[in-house]
Every structure is written in structure tokens, then in C-alpha cells.
Image (cartoon, rainbow, N blue to C red; front, side, top):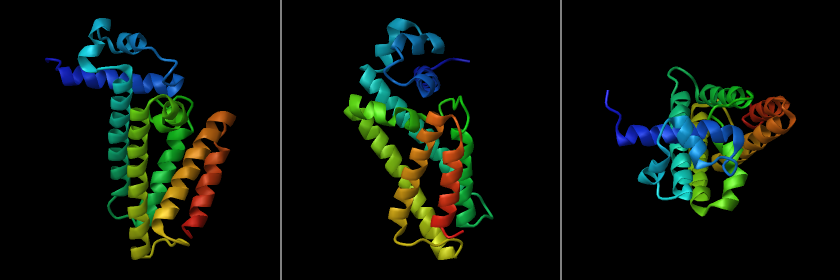
Length: 195
């Protein structure tokens, strides 16, 4: 099997996500990522113009994968909108409650750090998190229409509040090394959706 340039680039991005979800962005050198990915050190600039461009590509790749997983959960056949939405939050709880999230919690890990380091990475984070809130708003609206949930106020505000709450709960779960904040977020989510 022939390894293409796209395969190598993807391998670098996937490896970086795994490492940086544990260590952060600034603490990881390009050589560490390339070594772990099995890519020659001198070839980095063949795939990325700079560490900043690399970081932006990593964030966009992360969100593309994340949103595909989210879409899969939110499209579960035979479930009400409320059930699909709660399945998403349950998946979040399970993903964020492990010590080694293996690239599944990059927005939580890098959000505050890279927003101050890189404008292009901040914009990639903004685009990705906005896309998440867009999907949450859509399923909340669908839930209001199918009668499986209700909210006080509008769907967009509720979607944003829920996302912000879960992001904060994820940070607190990491600080305390305890999933209590995620359990509280799950309970509050049910209350906000009148479930």
C-alpha cells in the first residue's frame, strides 16, 4: 500500500491531537509530533507553512471529526430529538470523564491556551464551537416541534448556555479529577430542557 502525502499529513494531525490533548499546545514541540508519527523531521514544512498553520489545520481536522461524530449521534433513527440530544450529552460525559481523552477533548484542553497564542487557531476554535452550537440549536428546535422537550426562551440561547455549561464542567472535572461537575451539568441540562 502506497502512503500518500495526504495520509502523512493526516497522521501528523492525528498524532498531534493525541499528544496535545494531554500536554497542551505550547508544551509540545514539532519534533515530538513528527517522531511519534514516524515522519522525518525535515519534512514538516512540506506539509505546513508554520507551527501556527499546523495548529490551525489540527483544530480544523479535530472539529471535522468531532462534528461528524456529533452528527451521527444526533441522527440516531427512531429516537426523539430529546433522546438524541441527551445521548450527545451522555457521550460528552463519558468522553470527558476519562484521564486520557486521546484527542477527544481538544477544545477543552486548548481553548483558552491557543486563543491567546494564535489568531488563526482562535478563529478555527470559534468556527468549530459555533458549528457545535448550531447543531444543538437545530436539535432543540426539532425537539420543540416534536414535543419531546421544551425550553424557556429561544433555542439559540439555550444551545449556547448548554454548550458553555458543559465546556466549563469539563474544565472543572479536569481540575478536580472528578466527574461531579459533569453529573451536575447532566442534571441541569435535563432541567433546562424540561425532561
